[in-house]
Structures are given as C-alpha cells and as structure tokens.
Image 1 (tube, rainbow, N blue to C red):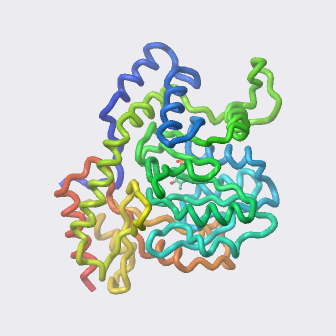
Image 2 (tube, rainbow, N blue to C red; image 1 turned 90 degrees about the vertical axis):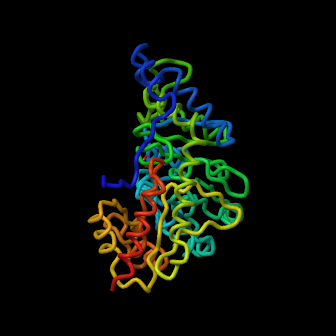
Length: 369
Ligand SMILES: *Cc1c(COP(=O)(O)O)cnc(C)c1O
C-alpha cells in the first residue's frame, strides 16, 4: 500500500489555465489581473469590504500588527496552542505575546482565562481558529470591547469556517489567512488580510508594498516591507477559491468518516469537539489519546508511520519552546492536548478505505499495552 500522507493539495479547477495566462502574458510579478480578482473575490467570500494579498500568512499578521501600531512594551493576548507564526508576528513588532490556556474539548483559547492576562499594556487579543474550528468569539469580542482592545483573527487554518452564521476573519476588526501548501486552499505560499476598516486598510496597503506613495511613483514616505503576492500565486489562489465549496465538502467528508469509524472508541481517543454555533472546516482531524491508552503519543505515531500512515503531533504550546520558554506560564490544558494529541491525514484525496485503514490501525495500536 502507498504511504498515506497527512496533506495533499488538489488543483482541479482553473489553476493551470490562469497560471499559463500569467506566463503567456508576462504578468508574473506583483501586478496583474489575478491579484485584484483574488482580493475582490476573497473579500466577498468572507463578507468583508477589503482584502490584501500578501506573500504568506505570517507577514499578513506582521502587517496587521504593525498597522495597529504594536511596538515595544505592547502586549498581545493569544492562545499558547497555535502555530509559531502567531507569536512571531508580535515579536517582529517588538511586542510581547501573552499566552492563554486552551479549552479541553475544542483546543481553542479559553475565553474564561483571558481577562486575568489583561494589563495596562494589552493592546490586542488574537484568537486562532485552530485546525479549522472557530474560537468562541462572542465572549472574546465582549472582553475586547470592555477593555478597549482590538481583535485580530488568525484564521490561517479556517477559510470558510463560521461562528454563529458569520465567516471567520470578518468577526474581529481584521483577519488573516494562509495559503500554504497544506492549508484548505493553497497557492504554494500566500496570505490574505480581510477587514471592513478603511483607515486600517490604507495603512496596511502601504506597509505591504514599500510604503510607496499612491500619488507619486517611486516616492516613499516611510520604511515598509515587500510582502507582495505575485500574479502567479494569485492565479492559483483564484482557481482554488472558485472551487472552495468542493474543497470544504471534501474536508467535511473526511471528518464525517473519522466520526463514523472512531465511534464507540471514545474511551481510547476523542476527536476535537465542535460546539453548537460553530461550523468547523476540519482543516485537520485530530484525536486526543485518553488515559486508558498506555503508550506515549510519539510511540503511537511511530507505529502508525510503520504502517505507512503519516501522522502529525498537535502543535506544541508556545511557552514550552525555546523562543518563548516561560515556566511561569500556567497552561495545563494546552500542555495535555499537545502531549496527547495527534493530527490525522485529512486531505481531499483520501478514500473511505483509507480512513477505515487508518482508524482500524489506530484502534489496534492504542489498545495494545
Ligand atoms: C499556517 C499558519 C500561519 C501562517 O503560515 P504561513 O506558512 O506563513 O502562510 C499562521 N498562523 C497559523 C495558526 C497557521 O496555521
């Protein structure tokens, strides 16, 4: 049997046609029709007025925080359980990420543990919609309002996910997406910012593209960045976005199959929970090994690998890794989810037989002493 990989991009729309158009017309760099179209369609898709395409989903976060004026002394509240880009973007600005524990069932930032982290230096709350599941946004937005903080959504993993009928990225003041190769839709590397705020949008446009004056070519009023997306990336991204319903349908199909084949096995492993009001896009399906499983998580993963099934550990909490190590941070839930969590193969090309094989293998392996 071929190795079952954790992720695989699928290009079954206009991606190739659009990409060829870039090469045939010479519009391969940061100008061209696909950038504008991708931005426009992505903004519409999220229900936002503005979108800004960038070269990845890390610099999008950097641009957002820079435009919000985050700098030395400023604190940004975020979950400790996330991908490292969320924290790094704060560091790039000279700010300090402040880490909050997770909820056990959803893995997302626990809103009940946010307020205790707020100080007079706090400027931003940055929830992450982990593995495609919306964070609990109502209490987050409420806390932000009460303390006069800005909500920035890191929606890198959650294109199309909905919280109480609203698409993520459009719930806070500004949202960020990634189009890395393993994300829900991809253009190789890429990112997008969405917002309804015109003033913030104008600032971010400048920061993304060397701060060039809109009135005078090659005139620069500030030090900014080159974080542009190319027309070739946007061509692929637009082709993907046109078929996002298909991509989301596949993720849903995979998640349903995991539910079906792991049903009745909750004593050994439980899937990430999807609370009422949240519509996950299941970027990754994850299980948490329960105390009844005597093996270490890494051993379970190694035994699955030996059966030709690629596995991924759930993210490590930021506060246990060298760049952000802090033993005073108390986040036991995130530590447990991370220590016992496994991401399962979750891409669109998996068949029901693949999922069955993965689940049967998991069941055998976790039952053994
Ligand atoms: C993927 C990801 C990003 C951005 O990643 P890039 O590879 O830079 O596009 C940011 N935050 C989270 C939570 C992610 O998963």
